[in-house]
Amino acid sequence: MAVQPPSSGTKTGTETFLRDVIDGLSRPQKTLPCKYLYDEAGSQLFEEICELKDYYVTRTEAGIFAHSIKEMAEAIGPGALIIEPGAGNCEKVEPLLTQLDSPAGYMPMDISPEILLSARRRIQARLPGLKIHAGIGDFTKEMVWDELPALEAHRRVIFFPGSTIGNFDPEQASTLLHRFASRLGQGDAVLIGTDLDKDPIVLERAYNDSEQVTARFNKNLLSRINVELDADFDLSRFSHRSFYHPLRRRVEMHLVSLAAQTVRVSGEDFHFREGETIHTENSHKYTLSGFEKLLRKAGFSPLRHWSDSSDYYAIHFAEVR
Ligand SMILES: C[S@@+](CC[C@H](N)C(=O)[O-])C[C@H]1O[C@@H](n2cnc3c(N)ncnc32)[C@H](O)[C@@H]1O
Image (cartoon, rainbow, N blue to C red; front, side):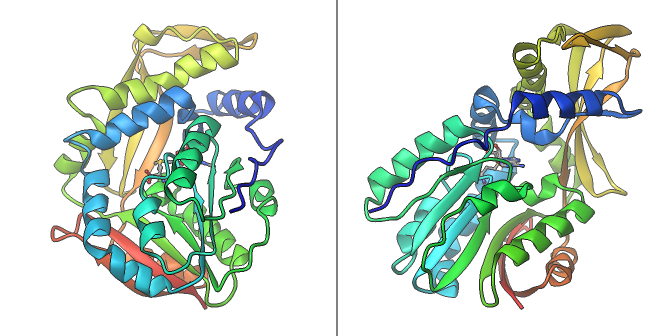
């Protein structure tokens, strides 16, 4: 059993966070990178979202895994090393690791250290023989990948569930898939979950839940900025808004300024008009053929996919060409 310590020095630094916030709030359309939604409180709120009746994504994906996990493990084959960027609470990988024939190891990475480290302890307790290395950092940057130790494996598989790929616009998603391909070798593979395009009513309900958990998740970003970057956002003067954008095929999440106001962040003033928004997240929805095209463009051969009976969600298995 080899339990590696978490990689050091990769934690998102306050300086980078501040630079990204100042840059985002200085744009004509104010924006904040969605990766910052996931501090400890944000990660816990995201777990609550996953349990919501209105949020079909997690439930649907879980149903596909429950039904087809054996087939997925067979498709991956023996001796595989599983790498999971944006692993969060690592719940989805456990049944896969349990089904796999002699996995070579598991490497979760996440920008949110608290949730990742407690998940690593849980998995290690349940699968004591498994080699685990947890990488703390931003998977869109090279550093966290460079720090992964080289483990002998029959095949490396990047496991990317939860429709996290949907948080990137198609061009960024293509860049990320290219990065995945460049970090893998011929015959290595990806297992990726994508939310499929569907009735806008279903989509908008999922991101505007009646219990307001998504609203708290969105507004938590402002609390985080207040605490970590010495800002004075008044949360009662912002509201949550999510809507489906049919041309861009995505659900957009915004924070709406309820009044004309000035907010100070680390000594710098930002003015908001009444009704002006901060764009905080995108969740892109794909067609099966659209996502397979993206995989091909990035150097993968899509081999198969699994989906639910309503075609709400798909999990794609593709090999590096
Ligand atoms: C939508 S959640 C999905 C979590 C988990 N994979 C699942 O399917 O339930 C996204 C996760 O990715 C992490 N994350 C988002 N952007 C990241 C980034 N650029 N680098 C590392 N982790 C990131 C978040 O902290 C969060 O845990």
